[in-house]
Amino acid sequence: MKIALISEHASPLAVLGGVDAGGQNVHVDALARHLGLRGHDVCVYTRRDDESLAERVPLAPGVTVVHVPAGPPRPVPKDELLPFMPEFGRWLEQDWRAQGPPDVAHAHFWMSGLATVQAAQAVGVPVAQTFHALGTVKQRHQGADDTSPADRIDLERQLAWQVDRIIATCSDEVAELGAMGAPVHRARVVPCGVDTALFRPGHHPNHAHDDGAHDDRGGGAEDRPARLLVVGRLVPRKGCDTVIRALAEIPDAELAIAGGPDVSRIQDDPEAQRLLEIAREAGVADRVRLLGGIAHEDMPQHYRWADVVLSTPRYEPFGITPLEAAACGRPLVGHAVGGLLDSVIDGLTGRLVEPGDPSALAEVVRELLADPAARARIGAEARRRALQRFDWSIVAAATEQILADVARTPLNGSALPVPHASELPGDWGDVVLGHSWLERHERELRDGLVEVEHAWPLVQSWGEQLARSLPDGGRVLAAGNGGSAAEAQHLTAELVGRFLAERRPLSAISLHAESSSFTAILNDYGGDEVFARQVEAHGRPGDIVILLSTSGTSSNVLHAAKRAHDIGLTVWALTGPAPNPLAAMADSAIAVPAGSTAAIQEVHLVIIHALCAAMDSVLAARSMLEGAPLRRTS
Image (tube, rainbow, N blue to C red; front, side, top):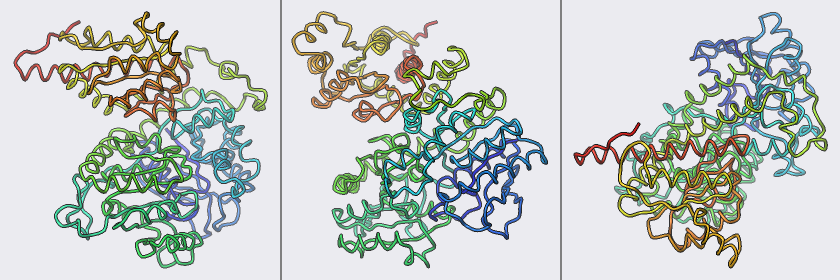
């Protein structure tokens, strides 16, 4: 395909670490390179901000960066670029007419989308849109400090209706789009990616004992301070001040902050000055180092230097730092916001805390620093998940599939009227969708099944745990409401009966299926207790409670999760899009970002079958080792 990537302020050629140069630059650069490697002809259109730049600059095989003359040829803050977007769009249209139009255009950031739609409507090019950040979120967290154009939110909502697909980077973004009245049936979730060949476990050149695969504070390293790292642009929303304040409660630790201008100019940076003043007030100035901007290719050694990496933004559309830390096998502690809710599985691949609480942050960091085995385990799981889900080859392939789909079957979204938010009914998705229910449902299922593929390492881990626990007398307790109740009962039937092979029956109870107990508890104790009281009655040490809820908010299910934790049981959850309370309460969870309750429930059934298959494969291997292979059923 001939693919146009439009990124008006974030050039893949820019130096990272500046106020407007960060994750989007990395994302566009890597996506373009990998699409080029996959045989596509890719042009990245970005605003010319230096008069010395050539119009066209080769970036990689199959990839060219095109500098668009829109506005003055000098750096301009991105929030001041909106007046130049009509000029950008006109130039884009002229270039596509002269060079031949692309098969599909993929706009990055909302202003890029405005220029892209302007050109695409004139030339007839289908458009996919990645917002990277939404004005509603920025306004909510920055308030009066938000420098975005006043009509950004309304323009973003209109743009969402004008493009053919929305490629969101996390499930939290999809929820935000829905809340602002955007057509989420057009949204597909593809996470950001990471170069797992560049970012990998290894040795820091100045610390030969460092190794991301095991604890790096052994063998005499306990004599040095613990090493904490923050990576990101030096802007207030990145929350470096929270980490500095937490450092006062983390003795014998030093903090390095990578980002911002070159270290030779760091003292002149206003945010750097603010952070240093906070460090002085907190009494930790001698333990804080500002490294300044660091070349992308030099970042892996800094991750390897760290015992713990921190990512504490006030809000984060996605966040590249957690992926880079994970790929390097380093444990990360972050704020439970935005994209981190997708990129970090709390307790498995990192730790998440509520934002804005330095003491809570410090407590979790101290726990990790005191537990080398936990750091090693989390780092290894994070690396494995980075390879399975976030490697750029996987992310580029998923993006390629969506772009190819858009090129083949555009929705012609630009022809649809954009309703005012007040005119949208509660079921507006069904009202405005021009395709049949079956076509939409097929797309929703496809999106959900992508999540199943991404979650396979966790499903496999669950299967291994069941294979260890159930044959030794362990038990599964399962519960849900409505359709989720049917899925829970389906799971217990597979366990008590069989799935892939003949085996002994395994203990599993559906808590909604015993109607006498269910109704008696409902009558005597109320709806919140219908599952929780049964968990307390049937649960034993080592048992596993599996809870299903498409919303993740069902009160009786949440009470069951809490009761299970109270008596020391393990809780797994299958939910709809995260964030949601059940996913947050569970020890581990799979949140399915499908677009409807029906699709979520159907994907949950696929996960149930995948879980049973994973368990049966472990049991079969064990049986073969013991000399009695299982008999496979038809």
